[in-house]
Length: 125
Ligand SMILES: [Zn+2]
Image 1: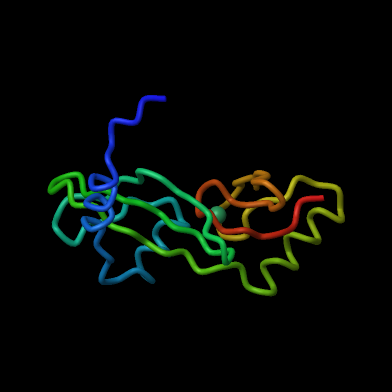
Image 2: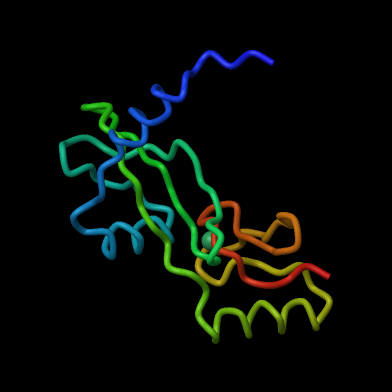
């Protein structure tokens, strides 16, 4: 085990994550696969995507010009999105993310999630 980060370091990293002023607009761009403009100039680069316990997703972003880090929350799946995914599974086709064109869902523990937005869309069988 090589843990170079102390607890204090992790806490400091969390503190540096800022929230974004226009998440709704940025999310739309993100779903479309466009570049995300950073509020501090430059663009936002995706550092990591992870599912949250309540089924929503969380995206960690870093500004290419200021290196400031931002946290973007992705709303959890709606009833109709879950329905769409269930229909794909019932048809026997590989379930895709209803928000990302052509993005296949991956199994994370007991759920099917999108690796691009971190949202859980269905229970894995
Ligand atoms: Zn997605």
